[in-house]
Image (cartoon, rainbow, N blue to C red; front, side, top):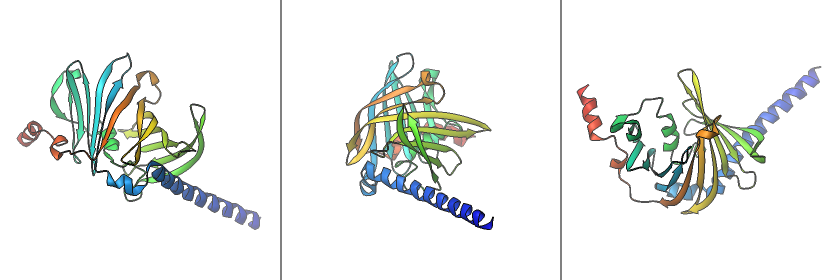
Length: 250
């Protein structure tokens, strides 16, 4: 009996070690598949521009700009109006003219969660331990009938991202997020493809995303152009002066 128990514990320990080791190996393979850590770190700013197609057939011009270490600005333009969401490394703010709000507003803690994920310049897998993230390998799964390798990333704030890697290229083909907000769970998903190199780093040129359980509400972002190391200023991401004035009056 003791021998069987010892054997079972030994197998469990080896399984756990292999799983942890495999998770780290897959992270490294993903980084190498993208171009390697040196080339990834050599990019200081990035600008993506293209078209976003929403449910119902609405087509908008869309763009995203990122600057190290954790600034992001996303814009959508349609019918002469432009919506903005930005994070300056400390606070998130937005302009939502389609909802009748043409003046800048601060984003609440709940609303800014998606933007915080987008603000991570290299993504949660790069330097994941230093960022306080935890990565687990969950084995094989399927995406649209094809084999995929599934990684679970628990972020420092407790939110969870599931990455599905192509077993041949080790690039992400699907991402699922779970955000825990006020006792509720918000679930979104994204599917990525059409990878091309930019400054030696692989980027997806096609991204479809939306509520995990409601594909009818998904939007597709088709990227026409990605520019690396373009000149960007902190002011492009900074909270507008009008908001700072309003905040100082409180």
